[in-house]
Length: 626
Image 1 (spheres, rainbow, N blue to C red):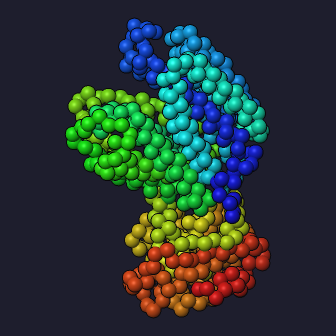
Image 2: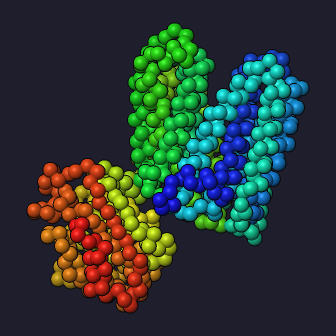
């Protein structure tokens, strides 16, 4: 997507029909669900002897029940069969479901209404694994974050508009007819857009379906755990839904009992939050540089904690007068609350989009849909746990603002736990922070770095952060070969160890470490890794390149692989370079958003990659900009 952004996907058939289909599905879900919930809240007595509170909670439970019962089966179907066909069948099912729901509204038949709600949960259960596993088949790796950002922002927009429209329609005099016609029309529109979704071949056509949801769910979770990063990403996503469900479920009572607002104020709050999630989801593509940047996940988690904490402190201690939306907005103090909500949404987008993209890019293709199905089950479990926690704490006398405080502190604890288990998240965050604060990185030719398979990357050595800049620009993980004493530098030491950096020394200093480094390099290349070396052997203190050492020749003699020449430009004279003496000693050299560049040339065959040729090539790439 070089030179483009994610919105260019909206002009392409490989994405637009799918986006419209999933948008209309989420939209219809919420039109129907909110119309039903409001009708039950105000007119339950005309339908049943059960009270409205019991009915509303029953509806929530019935909608989520299919995720537990059928997610495992849905994941297998999505892996075994062609996905666009599954989508069309699901959309036909939606039309049937909406006809049943319409009959329930028109005849005031509670059984039909509740049955249709359960079937809509089934519809979402089957569609979920297809929704996320079809994207990697139609999008390039560099488009995954942008595509997921569009899907997430579209989903929250659909939820918002559907919720509002459902409430508006059910409040009209001829509400039953209006709701019935609307949901059937949206379902038909969804089927029409689904017919344009391009084919997505099955990932595991020979898969034998296990119809036992319990054993299959357990098998999926066990398989997901084999890839630790993917499994913890699934847990991270599930935690987000715990966090989000806890906050969203409190909005009506928080609005009424704490802020003194009416239902229009609650709509303003939901709108603000949804806009935030949409904006954060869309910003991910720009902030990540068209790659799966998991460094945004800790950034998102920090924001989720800080703004939930501020929401607690911003909440009034005494209920004010009953207010409408305009009165609410007239109070300056309430703008702080709305700002907290929009920022929780923004940082929620930063948190969730890279995690979905990470699962799509790293999960084994043959099991991708089943892993996403397992993710949906865990999401549902975490949302149920969220409801139980909220009920227990509120019944124990905890106020809603105090519940926000507890949720914020729990989020911080969960983040610390996950990032301690997978330091790669925190490492990538530190790298991301570096190239979005001190530096402004431009790249050219990064597509020359192979998307898969082994290669040796060679680059000039200008500063202590050269490796971090290169890692930030590359979509694939890179193992760097680095002078062993640099491992003692605070912060950098953590990053190097987490990135499986290979320490190296001169033969005079430590011959055994030198030989081990060559062994580790060979093993990494055989395993298909990218290995990056700085052939000068040490960092420049003149701004000019030193003669390349013969280490690259020894590496290629043992493991012949392509060599990718690269040049860093603009780092000489920065805080981390050795201009005028020691690096990192002159604070005046810290210049925020200093422009730097990484230029990458086409791979060189191993037989041509002599130290002299590579140095000449990199000198041309660097030019006069040191």
